[in-house]
Image (cartoon, rainbow over the protein chains, first blue to last red):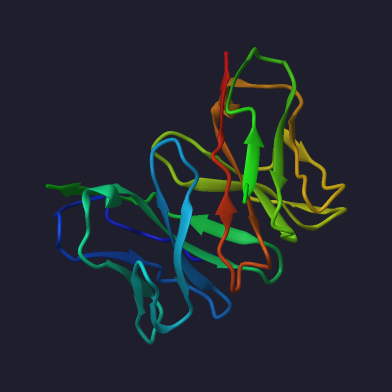
Length: 111
Length: 114
């Protein structure tokens, strides 16, 4: 199973673009990459999911290179309310549910 | 929409006691999951279910049991609580498998075993 590695923490300022990279060197063909956001005392919230290339929604973009060994979550113009922990998840649903949550990246957005 | 509802929000158990963590979803999702999250750590999958009557073990199932008699409910049972089970427990659901759908998580149950 693909183990994920993320930076432990990141600091940013309001209005900046933030890029958080997740490494998953052993990702398998059937694995998808999903990112979640978690605020204190709350359950994680789905942000975005992708398999390859680029995916964009109203809150973020996800960049996945051709070898899929890493992925980058891009948050445009962050605000104070984006201060949270961001988890990269690599998961598959063949042969049973195997999910690997990384330790997460603590993003702190400053004014 | 209520989404995924977990009860209770907080609970303190004594070693050896038993309890059931309740989880209900109103989105008609087939897949449901239980995770635990220890302080400063990521989430670990305890059990999951792909539909009513079907459950299977995740990464850390020891000390827990589940049942899925209806699509909506997925309770988690702790039979003999141990301090190692002190954690925050999250229930989640998704419409399909992990391939194409994200999870909807509940707000969690904070359990302390003393």
